[in-house]
Image (cartoon, rainbow, N blue to C red; front, side):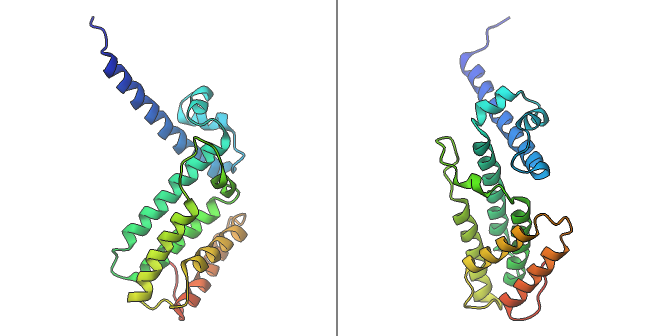
Length: 196
């Protein structure tokens, strides 16, 4: 039996560590969505198929794990905005993304304080600015090629949608949130327009 090469062993450990981290973040996404930011970290470790010690090796505390989850969610939202920027209809792209952002705002109520964590291991990303940039790119395109109001800003839209998300997050029936989003879209375009 040959001894394992030290470089191969290190590479395997790094791969295992990366996979464990990915599993932990995915499990945390589920558990935090179900039970909120105070959810059991032991349950997250259990669903990820690792022990609590592995969780704490990757995430020293709850805030760092929350920040990792939110960062992943925000990056996915921004990737969606980037894909939508190439769609045929600039107006539909903005409407669709605002619907996705509303779902994000409703799902992440109570987790926003984690974005302000000042921990050395926390991701160095300004999630609020990333969202503003995504909204601005889609809004600017809709203003240039569509019918969106010229006096509307990305900050206006983000604040309005965040407000709807916060005020309707505890309401399991999403119908009111979608009605309020439709009102925002009507105002943004100056004519009736519905989210998709």
